[in-house]
Length: 252
Image: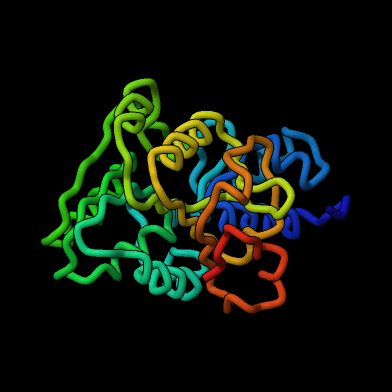
């Protein structure tokens, strides 16, 4: 990352990182920008006051991830809609689906046909509310302590409930994915819950815009060989996707 950036350039880079990865920690921004934590804090405070982002403890979150967001605030909306349409092909009547949260998941849920019948289980209250618009779905919300960072239920009860399940399909987003490192995140509780969601499912689908490819965060969720489907907005045969093709992982 270049050093001695102008303040506007630095804030633009911070905003881009937050929009791409949904949320990001102060430490990650310090590393990426090669500036002090105080500088990053000041920039985040200004971006928050300008209405561009939402401050959270230890970092910042995209406005699109907040429960008050609307369509115009969703970063890369058209790409996420393409991902959502591709994901529909994985659905089968009567299946049990464990699903996460986030703006890409939100676009997928909106596209589920009203006459589709299945059971969806989620640890994300916002996802549960979106699913309520689908009249033929049974919805199970796993409760627990609500993480402000991930907006999902976390804690021992969540892990216990998931350990008792064997879903047909797990559909989750990711903040970072890389061929060598696999899926990563920067929040320990998020990592643990996503691991449990994947373990509780026969098949795992990861939804990610292409800007999240080839990026790495500090805490590992899973290797690529633990994933069955990787769904981006790109064609499956796009050059950027070649490295992600392997004997088990199917790129859609």
